[in-house]
Amino acid sequence: MSDMQNPPQATRSDRIDALRGIAVFGILLVNVWSFIWGFESLRYGVLPVTASIFDVLSVAFVAFFAEQKFYPIFAFLFGAGFVLLTRSLKRRLGRWSDAERLYRRRLKWLLACGIVHGTLIWFGDILTVYAIAGFWVLSGLAGARLHKVRSNLRVWSIVFIVLLLTNFILSVQMIKAGGLYEQAKNTVAAVEAGRLIYTQGNLFTIAIQRIGDYLSVTTQSLFILPHIAVLFLLGAMAVRRGWLTQPWRHRIFWRRVQWTGFAIGIPFNLAWATMVLAEAIDPLHPSAYAFLLYAWLPIGGSCLAAAYVATVMLAGQNVGRWLEYCFAPVGKMALTLYLMQSLLCAILIQGFGLGLGATWPPAGWLGIAFAIMLLQLAFSRWWLARHAQGPLEMLMRRYINKELHKEFNKDATTL
Image 1: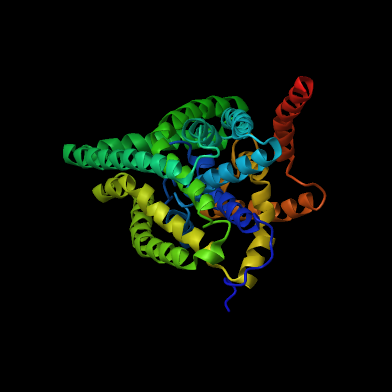
Image 2: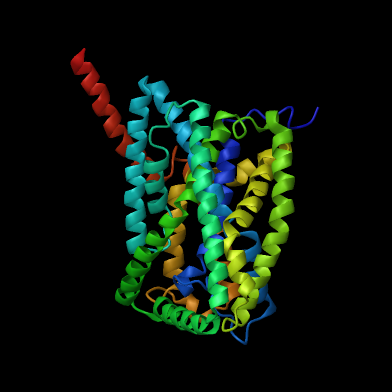
């Protein structure tokens, strides 16, 4: 019998934690660029004429392998975590309504972390949007039967498809209207202005720019709420159907996801990486196809993301144990490490810190991301050998448990 038919005796969440840890690292590969270039459509900025082959490959690698691949995985696991956590709370409290109320308290904590993160460290925070989406999408689903999750998924999928088609039509209209060159000039000027502030500015000027960018990013992120909602609900369904918690029982399903995801995702993202690289080399002459590809990036990126998830779920016993050994500690303290990544990037890259964004080439920035990953691999293992949770996860647990203790005290008074 195969490894998947005889799964290793691991805890319920080992493979899920490993997948979450991989997603946290994948997100860093994309985020590191915005610490230099700020918030504009040219995420990878402009490659200098002195760019080496390593700089070129760095841009192509991140665009193909990581961009819009790991935030969908993280959102998918966020929805899965909702089901797993509310089930655990229900066992402790006995009522779904209490479990859902405590989960909303968790969302409040994440929202507070997101606001602090976005205003004080890095403008591209995703926790704010996840918390808002969690209140909106997951409210009332604790303990809901599978058919209710499916019903919500159908509704949000329709909204997402309509928004996707609208964005595509608007992109076509924008191309027909012309003026791409003038728009590109304005974008390049804005990107360069952002780079100068973030890589050479002082603490005050960077803070002003960051707060403005955070407000812009958060406002625009509300337009991706339907996509996030679909991913949340798919994650919730994946737990209820056992796809994530018992992957060895669903090998055929995961094989189909894997091959479909690669079949669609690889050619699409090769085209996307080619367009992104051409734009970074010559940003003043963008291809009209780049706008059309960008309109469909949520689909193309999510397909490759689904293939990544399937590959992890299908990993055999030996590979699975290695993935869990390496990445599960990272996934278990994902919140702490996500915020730590931003803090380290800001200190290393931006003008108020070491300012490496102004002196190192693009390949060096990617090297910083990999160095942070290695540091966090070691740190997470060291920390969890001494503590049950990461530092911020411990604080969040205490915050939630305050409400839990209040509930128990109220019950005791009533009795």
